[in-house]
Image (spheres, rainbow, N blue to C red):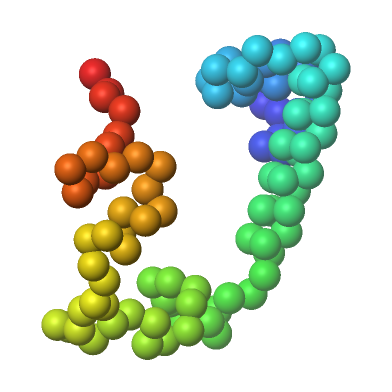
Length: 98
């Protein structure tokens, strides 16, 4: 079986492209194969880092970035809709998805 980061096989790259629903030319498959291999090699390098002394965390940001319970940001409906691509009757207008 091929190594996890071995994307030299065009059939393997074509399989990944098919899973992602990408129609790629042979040249694009070659580039994608090299890029996937590079990404997976970087992930393998990260897996080798000793994290035994690192405390698990739920997020990577600084502590205290969440608002206190009950604390609200005062913003009007008009301010909320100011950046909306489209608004109708005081609400966001979004495309119908069926």
